[in-house]
Image (cartoon, rainbow, N blue to C red):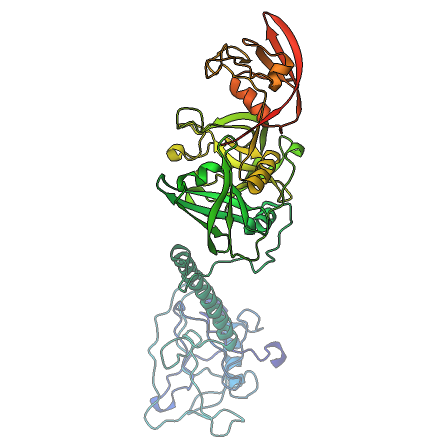
Length: 537
C-alpha cells in the first residue's frame, strides 16, 4: 500500500536477505542481456564507507524509502515495491523488459547466506548508444543513477557544498574572530603608543597648565599690601668719599626732600664726598647731608629738584608689642627694594654700635626694637614698618655669628637678630637735625666707670679730666649722687651696666624726670632728677 511508504527523500539501501526470508514464489534471477541492463544497478552489499552524509535528492529522482522490516512480504517484496514505485507502476508490478517475466526483479544476484558479506559487484556502464528511460511526468528527463553511500556532490574547488545557514554561521564566526583580533591588535598598539608618549612627553610641544590672569590687588594688611604702600617712599643711597664707599637705605620724611638714614651710612662721604639717591621707580638724584649724630646713629640728607615725593607715615614705637608683625625694606648687598617680614621679638633691647675709633666717640647707644625679619648689610637706615605700613623703627644693627653688631662690619649675614632704633627717638633726632643741624643728648651730669664688672652702673671715682666725676650744678649733683654710687634701676627698670644706663637715659628727651635707685655702702636709696642736655657731635 503506497500510504505506508510516504514520499521519503531518499531510498534505503538494499539489505542482505537471509535464506529463510526469500519468498518461494519468487522466480530465480535471470541473466540480463547487455543491451537491456537495468538503469538502477543494485549496490554492493558491502559495509558503507565513512563518507559525508548524503545530500537531499530532488523528489523526482529520489526513490521512496521503505523500511526493510515493515513490508508484509519481507525485504524482497519491499525492494520490488520500490522499483515499481520509481517507475510509476502499482506495487508488485515490474515492467516486462526483453523477455523478463512480470514481477521478476531484473539483474538480481543470488543472496549470500545469512550473516555473510557479499562481494562488491562491478559497476556496469550502459552500452554505447543506450539511453536512460525518462521519468514519468518529466519531459526530456533521464534516469539518474543514485548511490546512497556516495559522498555529497563536490563544488568546483573540491570542497563539500555548504548550506546557506552554515555559511551565515561561518561568516558570523569569522566576523567575531576578526573583531577580537582587531581589538587585540588595537589594544597592543595603543598601549605601546601610550607608553612611548609617557616616556617621551608626547609627540608635540609641551604646554603646561597655568593659572589665568588674576587681580594684582592685595589686602592692605598683607605683606604684599604693606610693601606696595611703602616701597615708593624707600630709597637706596650710594656713598663714596675719601674714607671709602658704601650702600645703605633711607626713607622720605617730607615733600621737601628730607630723607632719614643711619649716620654710619653717610659717614664715608665726609666733607667732600658724594651721595646718590635712587628711588624705587629708578629715578636718581644727588643728596647733601643736613646733619648727623654718632650717639644716636642717625642722619638726615636732602635731595633737590625731585617732585612727587611720597613721605612714609610715622607710627608710635611706644604702641608696639612683642609679637606684632613687621616688614623690613632695604637694599641688602645693594639689592634695592628688598622686602622681608617677621615679628617684634623684644623691646628696649640695649645695644651699642660703632666704636671703631677706639676713643668711644663713635659709639652709638640704642634702646632698640629687636626683630627676626632678615636684615643684612645694606638694610641700614631702612624702615621697619607695622601692619599699616607706618614706620616704627629704623633698621640699624644686626648680631651675626662671626662679627659684632655693626651691620657693615665684615659684611656678615642675618641670623634673625636685627635691631631698629625706635621711631619715637628717631623722630625727635630727625627734627633737631633738620631744624638745627645738630641733635641734643639727655644727660645726668656724671662720669661712669665703664670698666666696672659688677651689677649696675657705678659712678667713677674721678672725672675724665681728673676732677670730680659729678658735674657741679648738674642734674646728678642736685639729686645728691656721689662718686662710687651704683645705679641699679631707672624708673623701676633694672640696669646691669654703664652702657645700659646710657641707653636708658638717651631713650628720653632732655627735661624728662627720672627716678633712680642707688646703692651706697650697702644701702639702697632712690633719687629723682631732671635730665639735662648736651649737644651731640
